Image 1 (cartoon, rainbow, N blue to C red):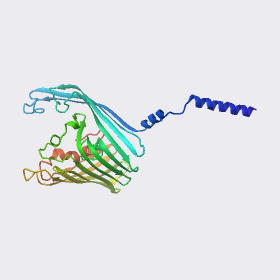
Image 2: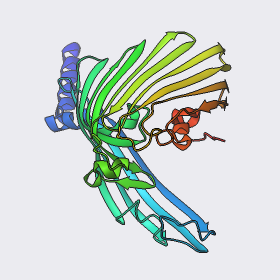
Image 3: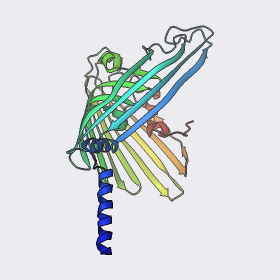
Image 4: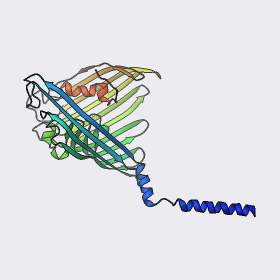
Length: 328
């Protein structure tokens, strides 16, 4: 009898627990599924203040004389990628900003409106396998093609990645900037405004990136970018590690690329192709990184200004250093 009584008590307790904790509904399961996706939220402020001391130095061709100029902007960015459903994923993102103050209309061209909000990401991704997916829509191209600035493009993107190498192929036809100090919407971008040329520049940019490890000490990154009536950009980045321990490593990075000018040229120099290279020895010890280098630019002064090339030749900018990096 005591055993039967105990079993009855346990059954009643189990029934009471089940009754007090109802099974999850479809809504609960859907909310839990959404919460398992990938998300990011960033809130920040960009403020710039300076003083114009030279009458010959005009700010946007407008502000001159002995005046203080400045601008302050608060921005928020968010991104979300759903979990998998039948191989598909959906990505969405938004950027919003509001102008706090502006002296002498310093950044009037960069932020034409005092506040705005834009959809940055809106894409569908299909995962063929864990290593291969195809993505179409609007997305951040800087994360997939290192030669692009941090900006968003509309197009297609194919990605493959395994333990030995990765491949990125794609085409984008329209770009928009969402920097902390600069916003250009898709609707305001035509070819002439975007590239600064009067030629009939093709709107589609094709790109291909390959990363693979030749051996323990050598890593290579060949790439190609092509935009008809503008430029073909073909290069190879190589990293060689001469010696590596748990504490430090040293070696060199070698960046080489060839610029093939495709636009109609008005001078011989503008129509000439150009070979460029940079050799960058480095010594990295724990969190300290010391890099030096030598870069040489070839012909064609229009497409090979050092101010353009150096951003890819210097390690901190080239590899998007995190908070705490200092570049001299």
